[in-house]
Length: 235
Image (cartoon, rainbow, N blue to C red; front, side, top):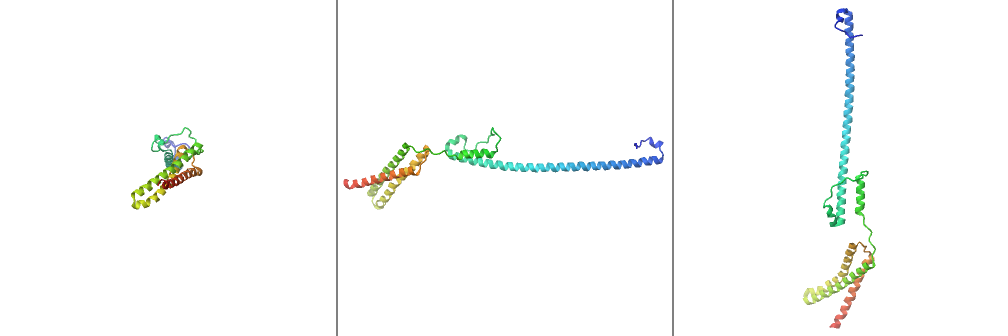
C-alpha cells in the first residue's frame, strides 16, 4: 500500500483514511522494532569489541611485564659476567671501562639474548690448558729450591748469632725462630715458583712442587750440617 499523501484526505472517505492511518501506525511499530534490534545488535558488537580490546590490553601489559623481568634478568647476568671478566683479566679490562659497557645491537638478530649470554659465559669461564713444563722451567724451579735452602741457612745463622749476642729471653727463643726460618724459606721458594708458573701459563704439578721443596730442604739440611761441623773446627 502506498504512503498516505495530503491530497488523499480530500478524495478518500473516512474508512479509507482510517485504514491508511492504521497501516502507518503498524509500519511505524515495525520500523521501531527494526531500529531497536539494530541498536541492540550494534551495542552488543560494540561491547564485544570493547571486551576484545580490554583483553588485548591485558595481554599486552602481561607481555610488557614479562619483557621487563627478562630485561632485568639479562642486565643482571650481563653485569655479573662483566664483573667476572674484569676479575679474570685484571687491569687490561679497564680500557673498556670500569662499569658494564652499554649494550649494542648485534648484526645477527636471529638469536635470543640468553644465547648471547651463554656464549659470553663460555668464553669468560674458558681456561686455556696449561703449557707443559719445559726442561728450562724445571731447572729454574730447582734453582728456586736451592736459593730457598741457602736463604734458610743464612737466616738461621743470623738469628742464632743475634740471639747469642742479645742474651736473655731472646737467646733462648732464637734457636726455635731460627729453625722456623730454616724450614720456611724452602716453602717460600715453592710460593715463588707458583707465581712464576702462573705468569708463564704453565702448570705447577705435584712433582714440580716436590722438586722445589725437596731441593730447598736438602740444600738447607746439607748447608746447616756443614756449618755445624765447621763451627767446632773453627773453634
